[in-house]
Amino acid sequence: MRRILVTGRGGQLATGLETALPARGFEPVLVGQPEFEFDAPETVAAAFDAAQPDAVVNCAAWTAVDAAEDNEAAAFRANALGPALVAAHCAAHGIPLIQVSTDYVYDGRKGAPYLETDPPNPLGAYGRTKLAGEWAAFAGNPHTLVLRTAWVFSPVGSNFLRTMLRVGAERPELRVVADQHGSPTAAPDLADAITAVLARIRDTGWQDTYRGVFHATGSGYTTWHSFAEAIFGQAGGPHPVVHAITTTDYPTKAVRPADGRMDGSKLRETFGVALPPWEQGLTRVIRALQA
Ligand SMILES: NC(=O)c1ccc[n+]([C@@H]2O[C@H](COP(=O)([O-])OP(=O)(O)OC[C@H]3O[C@@H](n4cnc5c(N)ncnc54)[C@H](OP(=O)(O)O)[C@@H]3O)[C@@H](O)[C@H]2O)c1
Image 1 (cartoon, protein in one colour):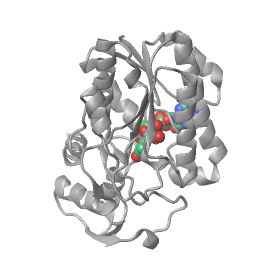
Image 2 (image 1 turned 90 degrees about the horizontal axis):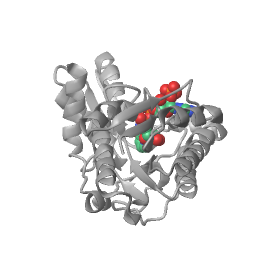
Image 3 (image 1 turned 30 degrees about the horizontal axis):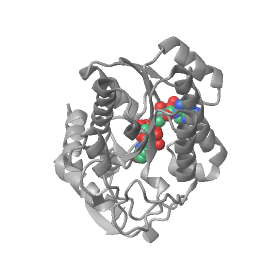
């Protein structure tokens, strides 16, 4: 197992995998729009023909959570029909698929960190379409592993960290919600974890216990407000006052889970893989941004 097809080139996670995979002896083949487009199934077939991959990490997705509310059909094509297509090609090639999913499949009402056995109940279009994508990936390919992650940030792309640093440089005061709980996840750390999972599959061959859902986030839990404070604390220099507000003070089109904390024990026990504490991930990404 050597050649890994990575979809969503240019996205946060795919960019991380481009660096992480070669470090463990894999050859990444990144594909992205416009020549790889879920709405044009022939481009997906062409990517498999050209790459002849040994495994696939499907990072490509409609990730605009609020915009999905008004565009659920388009989000469904990317987040559910896309994985269905990818899974069908993986099955035809007899290769494993890692499908990346989200904490937004949960409603956030459990009051404790979620286990993979807890029932999903998405609150919005993004979560619904991503959950459908999980089912499609499982239905289409027997060798499917779904990794649910959350609050992804990286030196590239559109994410909370980069937004905070941008608006924090422009304004003396910011208001950030303090009643939503989760785990920030550095894309380079998640890419390392996915690479470690692939290395385990390469070493052991596919095992029945690998098929299923796994949680994969930065270790530890926080709120968006505390995350913002940590961002400015680690970035150094002058920074704005960050006021704690509630979700009702900051209405958004999509309803988000108030408490999407996920337990990562299953990933650790099955693959020996745990992501570093989210604060370490933050240091890693800020260093990359400042380099
Ligand atoms: N970001 C988060 O906080 C977060 C949280 C939980 C889970 N996840 C999941 O983690 C995975 C990676 O997320 P990310 O943050 O790396 O995403 P990202 O930076 O938004 O990148 C997503 C990529 O998907 C591509 N894409 C979108 N629609 C497509 C289509 N119809 N056909 C082909 N490619 C398409 C985009 O291409 P263009 O750039 O050309 O549009 C982009 O390169 C996704 O599955 C996401 O759902 C993300």
